[in-house]
Image (cartoon, rainbow over all chains, first blue to last red; front, side):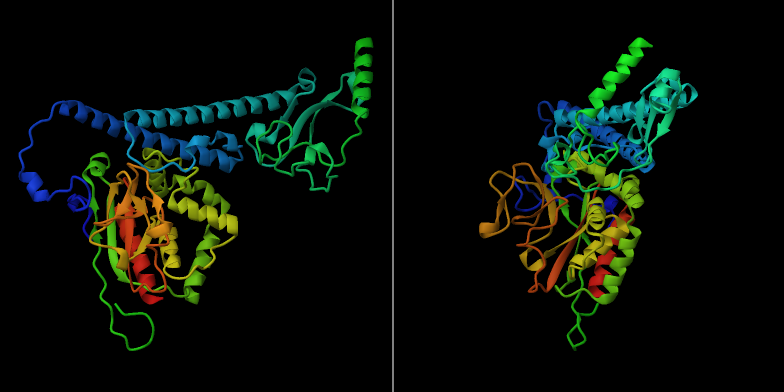
Length: 233
Length: 226
């Protein structure tokens, strides 16, 4: 097998502009007007392709690392709809620049997500150190780039007693909710498990507790009572 | 090189690997791009049990962890970069190996599809380089890579689909045979009537020649033995 280095480019006989390589080599070619500009543009395109290759590798490594650690990854909405099943073609300077800028934006997005996850991990440590200063703060494993469905939430001990006494603690949920059959008429489950009812991207595991839905009037009544007690306190 | 079956058929000659042509405008943009082809005897037959066993073993190696890190391996990474450079999103139009791994996770294994498809799949899984086959009876002249012109179609008759102008295609001397990085349409694919096939591999920038050779050799050996 010949190697790539030994390759000599030829053209298809049927392809427009096809010519015998020998004849083409022997034909004197006068420098066309603007050939310097063409050369510069070609070099610019080559440079952009090199940048795209480097950025793509960095992005692939970052995404693979984050996904292996349990990060949320790319959601469905991140996929740009107009690019679905695009056609392979030789891109011009402008299109290559757009691809390069998209990759830079994706990398910035990954860096931003990592930064938020780092801040959330620090926040979790602070929640454990001083729960009272972080009342009601809630973090999910997806916010921390961890696996599983745990939820860390600062809640009062013994309900009202802890609330009145200022006894706060970080409560860790017991993991992913078990699959349960819910009434089909329940609005949260009307579209099946893939439906996002709380603005979350599809496919993200729901970390709220499973089980039967609460009665509609219970929570407002409880909240009202708690608010009254806090105000009096 | 022997022909298929245990009858006393004459051994069919196997062509030597050759480099296909690359159109000048494509080569200007991708000087490292190469198309390697080889003409081999090929018949569409049921996959041999030992090939199915090999597919099963390969499927067992394709775990979720492997699927996550496959994009960082050298050959798939080169394909991802090439996809980006051609305007494709590799998360949507996946490179060949990533598509195969995704399909394995989705279906739970590799379902035998007969020869030569399984031979090409094994070559892909073991090297990361996609190998495609077209019926040699449909090929006129050498294969190559070029951009499509206005009004060109892919396929024959009513099954033909229009090609966009400037789309990168694999073509022979007379007509387009396949879109780049995509299997050829059924019109040109290997059928039970096929006697010879042209295997072709696209060596994208960054992929070592050794991987390309290994992919072609794997496919050829499997087609010869199985």
